[in-house]
Length: 171
Image (cartoon, rainbow, N blue to C red):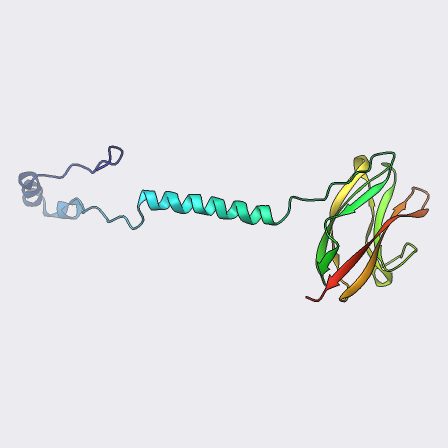
């Protein structure tokens, strides 16, 4: 028996007999036998450690967040985490540039669209503190597409920041 687990002291037969004979209603308070442990402490600890490892592996495979971008407050740049995505999947992105500018992501267009029906995927998103990041859905049919990123100045002028070819796979 382990030193940290103490069983309550058992009544000796004489004391148990005295309790029963003096007041029969005290019979309900007789000590119950110890319930068998269904999962041992060691096994429970092993399950806990395996659970922590499984959660760690799952979280490490989901990605570490937005991709790193090489831009700064004076030089605009963007990055996406992958160029191959399933239809209706998600892309993670990062952008950097002047704090007063905004970025917009569009597909298969050379001008800034006004709605999702015309190819706008996200934006314009403000560059708070010269950087922004997030994710957006790719509601495109399978095939090759051209992702275009625009910077939008405070006066509304849109400039192409860059493009990336993306491959959309069927779901």
